[in-house]
Length: 438
Image (cartoon, one colour):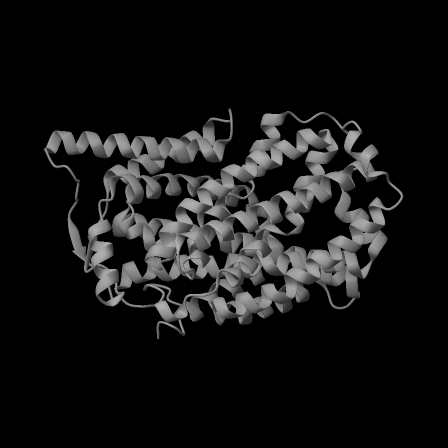
């Protein structure tokens, strides 16, 4: 049951842990995508090369730090993001809310990305209509994700090299005849983009994906594997793809390099879009199915099939992309995205600093690799800190909103737990516990 259901509400078994490079390929596929090309092109259009380089570099450093922290938790405990939150600050009610937000948010983005894939297939082939392609590509991804991490790995092994090859050929066409030194030294082709805004774009654009790192990092064996996975995927995927796009934006004197690539390369340009969205969207659907499975497990007390949740969410996202309605909710999806970074701040403080449930987690892991027998029903201080982080991320636009929300949530949570512990004279705060659902 657990293996077929890809360990959706249990720990990953030791025998099903994967080699570091297998997980890294999946993770790298999440970074190496058209959205990174568009990001790099936007930076290149509004900045000098080296200014854009440092914006991407420091944004990547921030993403690396966040991904490494939550990834180490997952590798040690063998749990997904939404499941881990039960013992990393939030308790059952908080974990239910997080699972639901992740499911809704990433299902929505699945619909958006699926629509992009459908448009690319229609433009490349001239066959069918975009709505029909939306259902075809959506069902294909459902079939991949339903079989769990193994199929995600196989898909990444195929799609990632094809994507990188297509980008390499397209970049060669655009950059051939352009002296590299001249491109690096050339001024920004468009209106100047402030450095702080650029770093915000780099970090904020992928922080939700970093927050769900545990969904794949749980298949790793140790913390050092997490380090290399996050390091390679972040700096090769984020920094490498963005730098290529920055150079292409300087060469084309435009930020609309995707259209130019498709115009110059035809099928090759369309392949870039198709393989990119394929690699991103299978992980979107995978994480959303894990989030909903965790939420329904908390409500029902039973293990709900992740495969069926994948089918339901995938069909819903495909249908919404087919009728075009999902594009109307992008603002809502962005709003939900602001709610996810604060979760990471609270998880890190609870797991690494307060260590409130580490003894129970260690005992259950060493005993039979099962879950701790109890968990908090809810943690009001975590919920309050989460809300504070969300409000700061939404209303305060100075700096990097997503990072602001993460830091504020973590700080408020730490101070709140310490204050509550001092008032109640308890060194480690424990709210009312309930038996864990099996």
